[in-house]
Image (cartoon, rainbow, N blue to C red; front, side):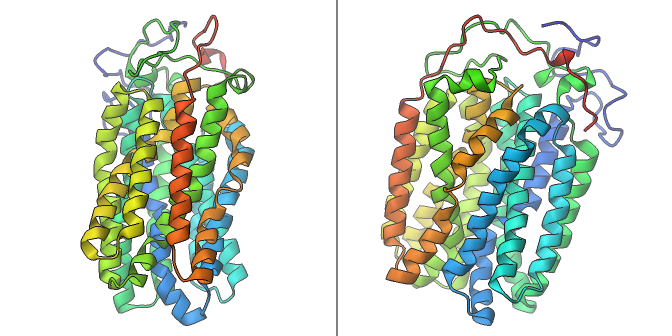
Length: 451
């Protein structure tokens, strides 16, 4: 790989660069960390479009409008499907131009959607508005920021992804309790408007100021360090020894690992989104008070937030394939606890186990694609796999329908346990491919993107 005109100093220090935004005050700190912390804040801000927050609104919306749980959960499902379409449409765009504009526009859509939700009267309005908001959160912000961070880091990618994702989990821990406090003094419609203001401040402004496509665009290297020889084959053991080698979509599709990862990421959202969405009201059905049920949600989110960064350091030593197998086993174990959890202490145990597992699962998808197939074509690869995920978001609606039909979530939770077992099997067959005559992706010949 040719050296860029600037040679960033070793020991993670870089010389001031005229292309680095003036708003970034730490001029001798690798600018990739600005991307990470922007991702942290944006992930925190998009939390209202996720299941744990929507689940808190179930009861007050149901009381006023009389909608069934399946009716409300369908908005969640529609949003997840919309995110797959957004990824399909913008994957290659993010590779070529970066994700700054997409993240900013997604933030604007989320704000407008939340304001609209505060005025809704009919289910179709909720489906469209929440669907657009959630689709923008997942397909615009989560994917966009994830691709940006993967482009800026190679060796330290797990800890960078972990820090960004801990923003999402911190938001899931804080927002539900904040909403409970707001609902105690005002209505659920006013709560959505307050959240819209917070979301706009946390997503739109930082995204517009700090996001940049790749370090090469600023004359820097990934991780802020001059790369060593990266032409060696991919690791075959348990350890993580990742080289900056990129596969094209055509090359990746020829490997078994690619299709095993597709299977893994196509079913995980079927279960995880449904559990997050129905968790609060499920525990209320079992006799817990509203405060106790929300406290389990906050415990789960806080646990996943606190364990996310430690998981990142683990994944810097353990290859992500085996990390994904471990996470799948822990998720399967958590389903066993959830099925029998009918007391507050058992609910606490579930919150801890599930939170510990989700703290690692939040990192897995980005690391699977980038560690297996590199960073240069990740947007295109993610776009290709998006249609395979169109059916997985039906999990939340299916869980709501099962409850409406049987009066219990037991069957749904058993199905989700089976999903986690399938994920475990998929990773057991996802052996790491070796690219013949691998050549490190040289992005210096590309047209620098201003976004």
